[in-house]
Image 1: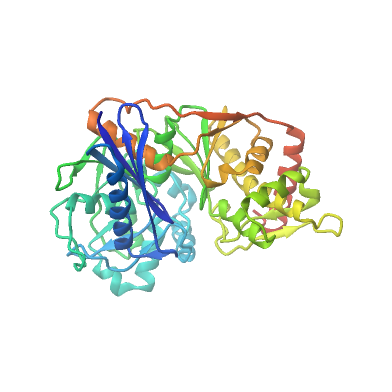
Image 2: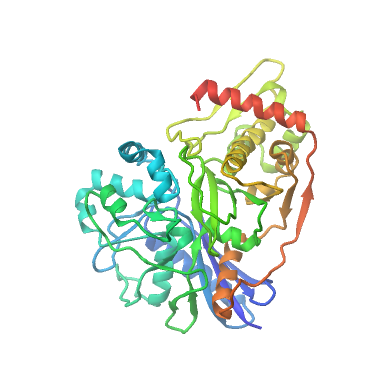
Length: 477
């Protein structure tokens, strides 16, 4: 039995799993938390990665032969000529670069951005963060010798093996690498051509031209650890989830974690000048059109706290209310929003009357509001040619009975809920197994799921219409 390890370095933690490369069965797991905030030293991710790996390896039935890392997309890791961090990394959900995003799009227009990079950049994107750095911290910008994404950084550190804890910069000859999937979220990569766009990077970064990682193919190796363990290319977290779920044409994933994402595998690149759909690549050589919202599972957590209950209590309240929440509509932009592009927005609750101001209706409005934002994402994918036959619902909030009940109502297609698993880490493990085998295709691993059919299209349409009307009234978007 060959063992592989998949690592998910997400916003909040690192998860590492050890998997049987032949069957996809998870045999051991480890986890370590990350510091809170939207600005975090990349060194903290490396420390969490080592801790999670050690915990998983301690419970594994044998040695691991290959490793891959799937990391949160868009994060900006800046290194100087010695390999030390120039400043703490800016995460995907750091929105300080919203003015720079608007300026960059205004300079050439959204059509040109979509045509060249597959996406219209917003504050989440790496390119806008570089523009912010050039404008607000020019001395730091001058020190930047190379730019990496979170998964690039961790793969590079793994290739460099052990570094003394007191050292600020790793001593390694390893070459930084990335893959098409994660690179396609930077804003200076061409999904259609598969290469970097150095002129776009230089324009955003005040003429500076830092080194970028070498782009690997889906089954390529990034090197080996000092212990001889094979390192696969790695990828972004959404690409890892798609690989872990074994997506096929017609499958659309709705992932409800810190952020909400809606994505599908496509055979051709997409270019949406409205900016709603990001035209990413996937981890297999295909493409991954994706819509992202900043607000997902934490909408439910915040509402539960407001109501003085927990998530199980919120579930019970929401299921006790009728569709439409008695007329209450929540725009759940609690942390600003990426889609629609409203980085400075706040949440809005409308339709309140004495008769409908109940805990049950508020709980239902939170669930419906969160899912309506994702339903808008599903509609945007349809606009670029995706024809969904089912939705696969994953992420922490997919465990909610209320979410599972309301989702088919609003999405209008059957919803399959795969058994709870770390699908990003599982996708990384599948990529590691693919690189280890050297085969033409990744291994086929089963994904058990439970189906929830569409209940009442009329109720769902009414909820969506009310949500859309409020969004347009409040934000014009």
